Image (cartoon, each protein chain N blue to C red):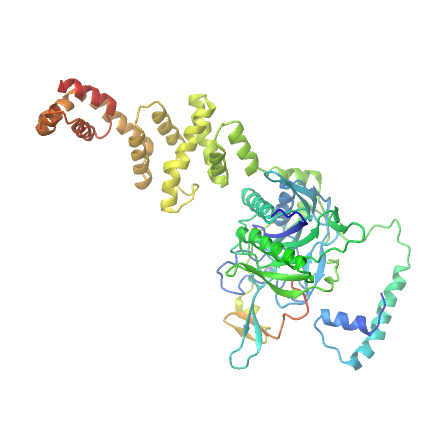
Length: 500
Length: 100
Ligand SMILES: [Zn+2]
């Protein structure tokens, strides 16, 4: 999206529902997905007069955890404020949020070749779910409201206006989602509304503006072009697509001298375009005030240290380790790091193998091949996750070692692994059986070869007449009799000797 | 902040209340009196005095344990209209106020 005349200026607000058992300010359960409406509701989240909010410790820990993972400063005191607006999905008439003093501020996230600065991350509560309808007989407009979602913990992550393209916004949103999932802060499923992205976009003439902290200011007499907000983005891909669409639309408007007014637009995923929703001539008037029902919460250094112990190696750190220390390809490193459970599984298998082999790249390659090959194919086919599959690391270590020492052929090894997975059989038992079989057949491989020769006169005659293909058939017969335990190369050499 | 009928109209709009001309004339001076009383309080010199708000150590926050909620029947008791377990409200809700 390079343009010689204009710069693209994007800021991104991401809302994430954090993963707690109970709601932000009451003990109602949070899991509302596909639940009977209005069954996870109490006087607090229904906003009944006199009901008092009691903050959830875990929710605040998760907000701080997100801040620590994105290099934010964590405030020593937590203050809540009331943000007022009237809407049926907000029964109190205000949302408990944070205004001037967010819990986390001044963070940043490193991307593949850029840095995105985070202005703030603050804690708030989700609103109820409302749907809008028109009564057929009376033509009256009405809304239906389910308060199960009201009061679910929500964090808002706000970047500075430092994003310069749809592509960069997409990479950033993907990284935020990955961090949230890695640290078990949220499942961050955009389709389920657990993560929502709202970009604001403007296009300015090159050299006519500068960024001062969180503000874009004009240089000289230049008049800044208005900012556009996009809502209803249902996927990470739509983050990029909607920004690109909007940038093109804005540049076209500027080039044809059309006026741009400050407005909110909605992304229409079916039409792949943004649509006008409403203009924003006046700034929002939420009449913030300090929330009098919640005390100031004091966060000590020890509290923050305890929370920071939950920080695990983040995906991009892991990818670097796999590439630089394990000498895996960028592709393999990415595939293994995407899902934290897969990465942990790989790490364990690698450690098990390296104990025996004491050779990092070899152990890494074996573990990586094992997971991304047969295991992934099988997991995909059965549609189960690696953590739910009944896999034993010690058994897989033995299996890989047998494969590495060429004690077993690749085909036979995969056959055993598939048999173990499909029939829930112990892999080490299958390996033991295989070993017994091969010991038995090793001694009498010559006898088996002799049997095969005497039982397949036609193939033997074909070979002697110069048809080399029949050797393959004869070896196949030998392999079948040894149930695959013989080394095909050894079988071939014995066979050739016997046929001479 | 200048307290006049325009200001009161704005506040009423944000609160989704419709005020007649007569009501505006009646309430504007009342609102003025209330806010002027607050101004008197603000004249008190509070430099060096800590806010009297209660403070709570992080460790004493509520543990994240979910408990039973109200029944759907109870939740809907005060709703004027309901439909399939949902609260039903009439009215045009998209004009004017920006939804968060
Ligand atoms: Zn509740």
